[in-house]
Amino acid sequence: MCGRFTLTKRPQAIDSTALDAAFNATSWSQQHNIGPTQDVPVIANPASTPDLQVTPMQWGLVPAWSNPQKITSPLINARAETAHEKPSFRSAYKQRRCLIPTDGFYEWHRSGNTRQAYYFQQCNESLFYMAGLWERWSSQTEDECLLSFTILTTAANSLMHPYHNRMPVILNENDGLEWISHNNATSPQTLPNILTPYSSEKMQHRPVSALVNNIRNDSPECIAPYTIPTDTQFNLGF
Image (cartoon, rainbow, N blue to C red; front, side, top):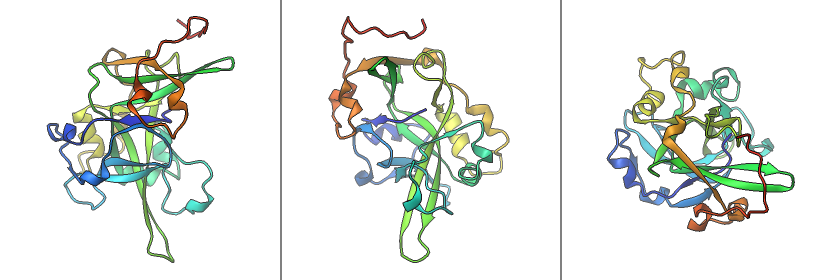
């Protein structure tokens, strides 16, 4: 799954890529500990135009037909294998696909009463994109609109598997453009071919401190390298 991630790069990191997208500087800030229900910059075309926009959206998809006040567990993840058929996701899967820019995400390993956080990122620590779905919820009685999103997950690669059996769908630029495309050349039937585990050889990870366990902590110290005490033992299945 994906329950926390980061966005520490500047928006200019997108400008030199094939995913050139217009953005409002006020909608993008450095974040070292992003959690559910927070607003995050998302690459989509909510105006249904060919131009991509970087738009702030709430993490935790709210289906258009639902009542946000009755949602007790935010829909922060959707399984790539079944999202196209689930009532909460199937409409967005066909019409409202998005990309979530990030430069890393967290996962935890539990051993007894100890819960150790790890930070996963590209080997070159560059910006990358997670596949997602977005939705627009509008109030019928008030002038209120909520944009929200969920992150697609797939089976874990060999680097991730000792920590969790799922991981976010990570897309390169070409697959990202195919995923987010709204033209007829990209049909939902062909999309599963790109929603596969990312190469382990292109990723790295490291333990980080317990600071990330508290969502209120948002500083570079959250991703700083951390040395696990020698008296702490973890069985990672190696």
